Image 1 (spheres, rainbow, N blue to C red):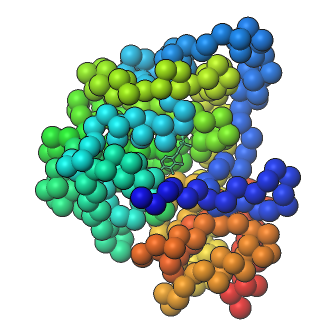
Image 2: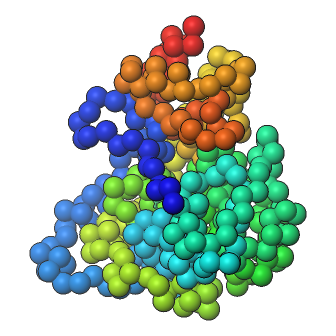
Length: 340
Ligand SMILES: *Cc1c(COP(=O)(O)O)cnc(C)c1O
């Protein structure tokens, strides 16, 4: 099998503008940083709570769901892994539209599951009928999708949840930047899971913390394969404080969303094709469909990292994380220089 290849992570202190792995450019909540400083020796000496109970309660309050419906893990990648481990196997189908988050493939291969990749059309409309016809043991939908930024209508996700006999995973890693989310679906569908992460909206990618929202019957199944203590004491304390500071997160995400609109306009003005995004990144295609690899390299040489996927349908595109206004302006100026 091919391993998952994450975006480049330059060493701390490296002088690069890092727009390649969709981190939030703004700092985490001051309340989260205070919680980090307040972690005491005893909290580290002892094993943490196996279910990160304080975090579950804070997330339950913020999202309006019963804490018993929340399963926390070491990043939402950990939840994805648990779901695949619990539900997939040789001879069982894992289904998702393409292109999407590359890790789904890696996880499916680890279980030797049958992978069915259903192509999106050029505008990234959700291929609901085909996804339904495949009847996967697990169906993954990233909404907003990466690398396109596309947000899907709850009506379509609900059609999937109703029509699928297997588990529908709605990966909402970017929900904090989007105009709606699908949490309500979980209340009506026992086979639906919504995944959330602290890595993007909450500016805590280094912490490794995420969670799934699902009905208790499904949760008790997924739970069987979880690590004994997937959320460490530090992540639990810091994540709980971050979750309780919705105002800070909303403020940072609103700034990113405002910058996203401006950046999309600038890229389009340069002649790039830009897809409508409800996330904290933009997919930009070369005007003539030429390879985007030389542009990626030229930006890298000039100290700006963006994401290039050497993959079908993506070789003429770059995925660009929305940074601070200053970072975006540097990107635009450098890109203009590179493209002429
Ligand atoms: C970033 C991302 C994740 C991973 O989140 P972690 O909580 O950092 O593991 C999951 N799904 C998608 C679609 C992502 O882009």
